[in-house]
Image (tube, rainbow, N blue to C red; front, side):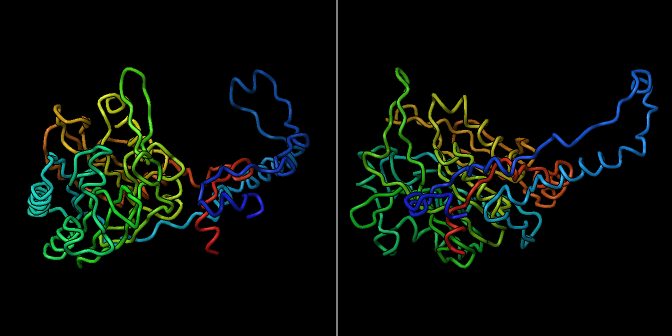
Length: 368
């Protein structure tokens, strides 16, 4: 299978839709269905004659040759049993100012409030410790690996997660790593340890004439690794804002057995009304899992105005909880038992056409 992917693409961990050789396409030439009268068809009284046995076998053979297990390369992992079936998630939609220490203290208070209301998982917004601007990213960036005083934002997250015994998806902050800057989400377990670090894979470079222009790539470097992490509240795939537009990443996470996808994000006043909820519901519906998002609160006086509307979406694409654009803390229940119910009702994983298309998880493929 590696031969279908160039070495340069393998090294850069790009996800590909792998074309299938024509020789593996199904031929219908050998299938002949028996003739029926119009009357028998209208009355639904016809039966297949004995001579149609070969037709039955051909149809059965065709169905088995769809090879749904081959639609994911490597094959999709089974959904793991989560540590708990039901729990509350807290989505903290926070106002962000130019005062970094105030932002850190404010986020700490919000996490504590969410936990006091029963949240076992707390999600923060994208870039919650800094104004969202290319000018601010270098100034507010932290050395996450060094920790301590070099990263007061993550030091707070570690302390609070351990003290409250909760899992925190730490939104995102500007990260300084050598001479590079990243937009980075840190995941802290209930023991206060850093369990995962996701660097935004798809940078927000857009130009909508007369509406909005923003180029993250002017200051930030794109991450190179998908991030999925096992926590006390299940297996979680992480994306940041613009990552949600790329369904391949969500599909990879689903194939790795994710129960929940978390996207800290700050959609704007142009794309927010059109796409924010749509994309969340699409990712949840396509992959039959939960999707949680968390935005900063709207500040109309800021250089970049966030749409808000932090949301939890269920595996049927249903909006379970949301808010408007002001500061808010949403508490909502996640029930993983629904995942199997939805997947039984709509058995998409058993109906994929591995004979026609494949999604390649390059990272998993290279690790084998």
